[in-house]
Length: 235
Image 1: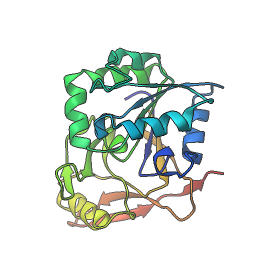
Image 2: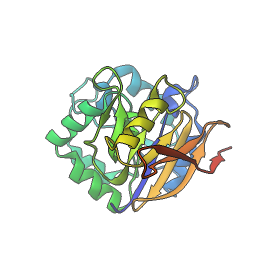
Image 3: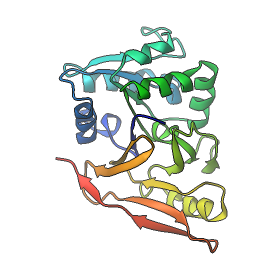
Image 4: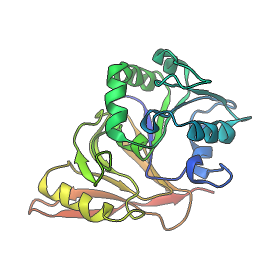
């Protein structure tokens, strides 16, 4: 895939008491624009009202904020998904990865998102909004954590958000990479993110110290190995 993807393992405006986030600030800087157009896509949460309100409060005054509601929630209503082609940032919220992918495919979003990225929009997202860009992921969409090898595949790897922040994430992800349930991939802790351009890793960043990022690979002998990546702490 051509274009830029910023995938957050956790953090951003949704976990900040006052809506501020160094990762979100950097995301806006990536556009190179003083007042970028930012569209929030909260499909994974069923377009949860409180989640949308937090987004609007966090980006008010520094971006032209909009919402793509595929559930026709008032007061936003249904929007034509091709509105995404007019955005500088497309920010995908957390929730159910499986539900997000199913709804997006029904509404034709994969092709629209690929076109938006190729024409300069930054694709971003947290948790399920991280998972969706990869080939597969670790998800609790079905209750217990499970591997889901059904992502968009914009990034040719698997993903695991909340790597050290939630019980069993690390142990299970290592096991799934080891047994081939998921491809080699990227394990990203809360408050950390990975930046990709044209499908290649550029760097890992964090908005708090001591929140690591790992490249997890099958070692050829039935085990998975963590390769800790350099992480730049944003100020």
